[in-house]
Image (cartoon, rainbow, N blue to C red; front, side):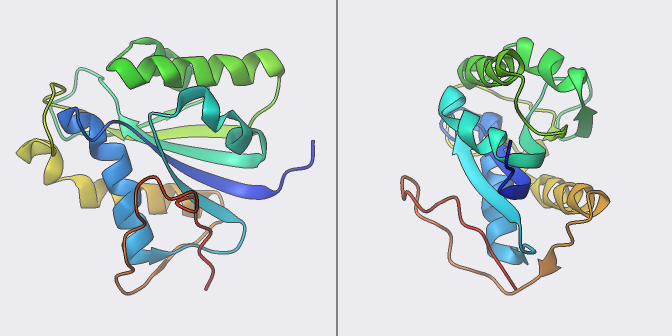
Length: 181
């Protein structure tokens, strides 16, 4: 398979379900505050599920950013690799998690996907129907962004801190922006 993206950073979640929106909020802050090196695609995947499969198929490496239940206190930053990512998605944390599990299953069935898959997440407190994250999670979103930047650096993709960029509009087909310095 011809890989056209070295690293995919994929924010997942539903901003209408409280802390479930933490992953996409982290990716929005990443896009505003950091510049990605060439070959890195930063995408707000929201709740698109299987529609995200082509993005994972074209990526050599991938970092998923999402809320994930681990039994740790709310706001805990977590890192999962390999099979642990699929196990976490199978826990069906929220309605969109079913889509994540389907996405990972589809990748597995096709035998295609990133060589390495990491989930950098945050433990939620509230997942009910509400806008915005709980104080425990909101206070750690910048730490989640920093964890994503550090994970990308482990893959050799060094983000550069930049000035605030305008946030991409939701629903814009070009939300999957590649930022170059």
